[in-house]
Length: 450
Image (cartoon, rainbow, N blue to C red; front, side, top):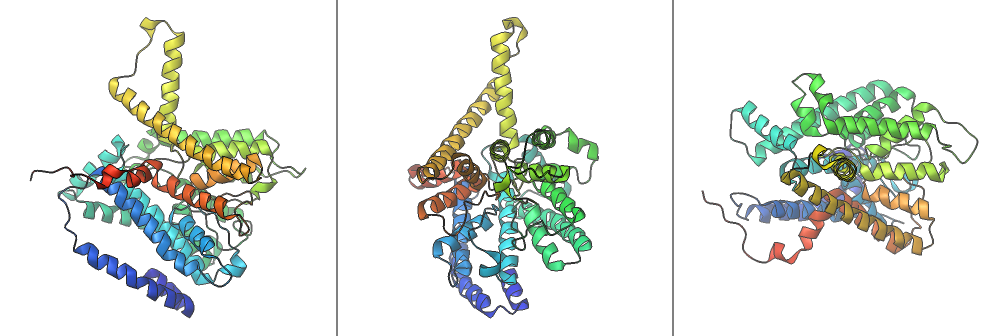
């Protein structure tokens, strides 16, 4: 209903008619969906398939509202996928292709995408962390009732909505523009990165940019961690390894960029611009107060690595995820200690840690394989090696920073590759593999005794 209300408020009758038409398949899906019997317990592979299909279906449905005069269907689909996956890449021009109501709805899609991925990652992730399990148990205990997916989803919605309203109030207080505050509040907490116009953050003062940076960081922090510490001592928040890793990597990236020739011109950059760019890349938000295409190759490579790592698990951020990256570093450290130190001085990883490291290493290999394959397609099309690597990493990490490759004139195949990367990066490669794995659809499901 929110998109229709927005289109009516702005008196965008053409968009209203499109949204009303869009309601028909959604109502039909809801009607027939209610007739399907709900199993006692949803298996992980079933949950991942449902989530994947939901994101893909929403992307195709809402591509209809972006498909307007002088906009190809592929560009409309690209925009819709970029929105629901919270990426922020765009091949369209704000002044030419977007009405104010469409800009708000596009930001809302990013907000919905961020909300959806939090629910999925906490409840159904095959790599579910101890922190995720703790928040589910804690929620059950605090409510003095049996845990249910319905109650859990309501908690996530209330918590996510509360932070979003806080962002809206703060940004509106700084900018005095409710339109800008509404769009940036939705796209910062969802680490989406879609701006209100082609100027992005360049037209805003430091206070507004600082607030955006703060809410982007908040969106990249694990939501179970934020929840568990919303009523406990704040000291425990910074005791979390993943949060400390996020802060350390942002500071490290900023320090390296400060000591690197950032721009190809002789112009100097403000320290805050560098910190903001580092936060934007690490949190996979995609906001920037400067043009990425003006950066030097070494700066672009540094940002590419940061974008690949991404933010915390169970957050709205994309990327490989910090907890997995830390686990791989832990595995490398264990291997080096085993090779260098005397055998009696080395404490080996236990069996559970070894199994987890194997899973994460396999996932890392799959991520790199997808990234390299996508990158080679762009290289074969004649695009610069470093710029194209940055672009596919930005899509795969659902970041949204662009070197200018993502535009309307981009060839069909590279454009499709970016669409696939955005979906693979947001839904996780494993979820897509399970979606197309034959045994997911063939054979008996696990039975549960009541």
